[in-house]
Length: 152
Ligand code: 4NP
Image (cartoon, rainbow, N blue to C red; front, side):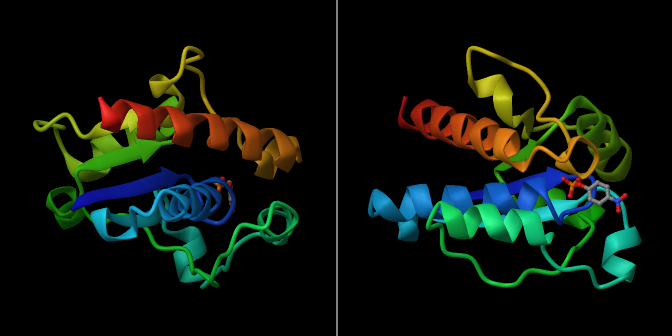
């Protein structure tokens, strides 16, 4: 069982999109039983507001026929470091926040999702850019590259 958590700032736009895109990829390959897949925030604000998935994230998942359930923002907890094998952040700010929240990454579990691709960039925050299509394609590229990395 490979345990993966996708992490972004708010856990309402990028990381839930990544959670459901990756679940679908794994499912299409008949690998559901091999993975446990989750998503978390680095900040607590949206958890305190009990914020659900952003409507534009839901819209693009629907357009792309990717199944999803409602999900409420949850900040990653320090004790969850041991619960996951891969902690996949969307941008370098998430990575620094994760180091603050979880302590030293002794087991080298923390990566940026696009670091598995030939274009190791940040996935821009659509909360600010408004470009959820770009987010979808970046996350899809990252998830495909991550699966190929695991196969090797
Ligand atoms: P996310 O986007 O990190 O991709 O979920 C954001 C969602 C909410 C906020 C910022 C970014 N916010 O400031 O509430």
